[in-house]
Image (cartoon, rainbow, N blue to C red; front, side, top):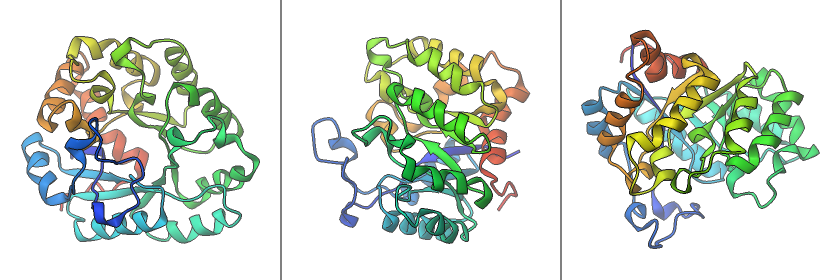
Length: 283
């Protein structure tokens, strides 16, 4: 079975639509271009066979850019998580056109950047959410703790919508956040269509992260979702703000060491293949 990195990015600064990515002290290390040529050797060293490429800008233009990157690198990239304006009046039609490209697997509004933490519950968004299951599209939830209660309402209202919570909903590991994150994530997990990405935690923990610091959070995610609904991702290159690709990969091995071989295989690839409908054939 192939191993999958189910969450990484590429970007080219001259495209000009990465509003969050600025040459600040916090982000200076990743304020440059990143492409597949730089990632490929890291994937090989980590034993990763396939990947999912995820949006980093809230524009249709970036989604088309990512789909083209995926087309040119189909030996590695097996799926794309794109962006669409789910509040637009023509959103269902736009999603239908987007879904005609088989590489598009999911749509991710950047909920963490919305001033209104309940944006996803707005009436004008519901038609788009309702259309997605019939189009074979999933919903990647880029959220923090304050978005989990609204996301729970979405799952109640759209029980057929496959929701993948990115980065374990970004708990504030660096300052020891636990509640309400822990209870709200457990409530999300009670919906059988919800999955969770094991990614992003080292960035939330910061430069002083350690495997023991992360273990409580990872164990909770596994307790809630089970090994059959947890999906591993690197979040490269954002992960490099706190750890190298290789170090996060090694830390994951330590964090999953208590699972059965079958469960580790599921988290490391099988769950991504099933959840995103990826082509699992060797290329």
